[in-house]
Image 1 (cartoon, helix red, strand yellow):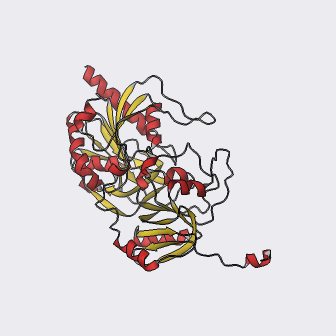
Image 2 (cartoon, one colour):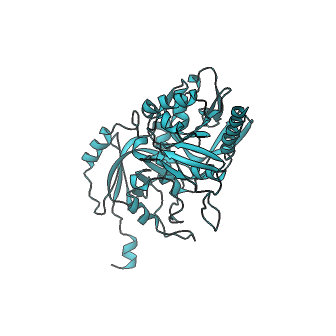
Image 3 (cartoon, helix red, strand yellow):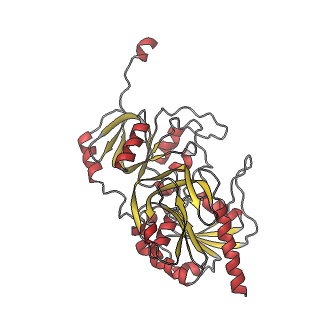
Length: 397
């Protein structure tokens, strides 16, 4: 075959996305082969695809990247966010507009295609991701099956039935699937250009982090402020947590339905609140803290996934640009008296933060650790430690 004839050869479909309503979107496969169910969402971040795909909060989700060129910086060993890679948590599928190109970045250690294969993530390229994003905005996040076969052979009827039968994320507790199985101490501090990571030397605080699917950079930022962090499983009891005599307790981000995780998490959190230990929650931790305080949560139409979301902090009057990743939200009108809304999305007015009046207890919906995303919200970690210092002073007095 000549070069001229190759240019006119039609490419063979090697991957499909099959929606629960029977819609079939054809493209070209990348990464792992096979088929897997998931909820399809879109992410508007321009950078940080490795952090996004390894965020445990994306477990059982298929991420559509609205930025067209993904993969040109490759992948490396420093930018993954899941604590337990052996659990295979994070996104199950990824959808890209353009073909994945060879990496051209000095930090790259592998091609994105090889990295996706190693993690078992199924990829689909060559589709109109803007059209899919518009569809999600109009119709909500669909259940689907993403499939990749090098032969291009698919049983579409079986895939349609599989997509239709998958129940979705509502009512699903995933925290126990992605979290640590036993307690561990974390001391790694944030990454420094051209030096990498280091370990915190002299701890000033002891923090227990309840792991519902936490991201590494959250723990790094707390260690960077002088905290020895004890990471504990999501089913840990309040008695087990308080036995460490922590200065504060962190409730992490994570996947799934907060109401389902709350069945075992809410009673534990209420015991922590009764013990008057400082508490800080992020994302899923924010949602289950709201449940423990008497609020409710609800499934969102399209969710918030991106690194460019404007949020207002009512405690300072400032607007910050933040990173978001959630498909459930706290119903602001459900917060009882004594629980104050501190942050709100300026995109759709949904709740993005709360605090318990007169107590060292607060949480936010967004991801202040900025992996990926802007660093506007880094101050929240210092806010947590300021509350701990105030709590220490009161106890000393």
